[in-house]
Amino acid sequence: MTLRATGQVLGAFGACAILTVCTLYVTQSTAQRAEENRPQAESHASPIYGITIPAGYRDWRLISVAHLAGGKLKQLRAQLGNDIAIKAFREGKLPFPDGAIIAALHWNEASSDENTNAFASGFPGAGLQSSVAGSVENVQFMVKDSKKYAATGGWGFVDFKNGKPGDEAMHKTCFPCHQPFKDRDFVFTRYAPTP
Amino acid sequence: MTLRATGQVLGAFGACAILTVCTLYVTQSTAQRAEENRPQAESHASPIYGITIPAGYRDWRLISVAHLAGGKLKQLRAQLGNDIAIKAFREGKLPFPDGAIIAALHWNEASSDENTNAFASGFPGAGLQSSVAGSVENVQFMVKDSKKYAATGGWGFVDFKNGKPGDEAMHKTCFPCHQPFKDRDFVFTRYAPTP
Image (cartoon, rainbow over all chains, first blue to last red; front, top):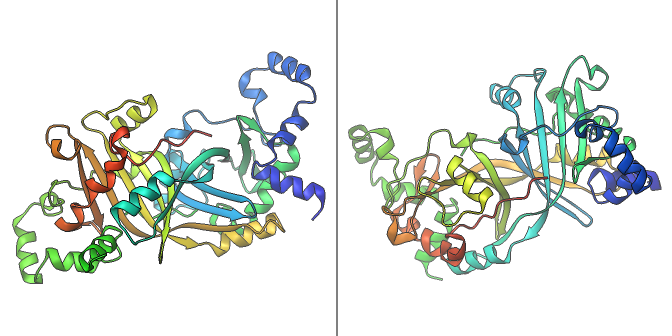
């Protein structure tokens, strides 16, 4: 694995956001001037795809949850969908219609001593260990627009950390990583069953 | 740990739902008669608290996600809130107002080979392992009604598996387990930060 590839891996999982920010904003004064001359939405649009953070996405409905671990990385993750995406998931509709947006919220997994202690007290001997969503790692969106993003399966991608998108090299990794899921319209996440 | 306590532990985590169902419905014919004579909502109400599954809870907004493991138990979990609960979480309002409902959705954690393989291909060398929400384990609700449930901190509790509530013994474990969180109005879950 080359250093550049390593950087992409780290960047894609937000562990290297400082490098990303440094790449985007060479000096603070340059950054400040750039910020002042551009509307907020444009300044925070992703490279390649030009996607900004969709308003109100934290209110979207739940698709599923996931866990990702490797090396020092331990994340709890939730995928939310806007109304178009949720409707398509529930109806099993493929490909997703234009306008569908999937949000992937990634937190660093944090051991919860308070939960673990409460479970130990409530259910002695069960040895239950609890972890919860800790600090924010990043948030990613995939936006369906079959014409605009025809070259990447009809999806545009973006990875934000602290409200700032990753660089172009990072965003070049999105579609290849999603390609194994071509049969599901390039979407990793399956809709979680309703208890 | 007594056998009864063991049963409560297993029951509370849904691993022993057959026992629970057997306790509720002594014989099938008795169960059928009971079902026929009661409206559906009432027949599925929890012991002690009389709570049924709130309509549309799968559409509620996300509070946080969690992981729970111990022995053979490995769960991915999501907590959703109705509008009153979400507003209170976001405003840091304690105690929660009457009408607040928190839903805890519990799935068995399932290794996702397809995700793991996609990450291995996209980010070689990172050694990422993915797991996702698998089969449904159970769903729990806590419902705030400070008068009706005054004896249990203003909260009523229920644990459903396959649409059936657990038995009275199980439901007696709910409030004691939540008591360590008295300072947060008996709520385990903290609101996850927005990426």
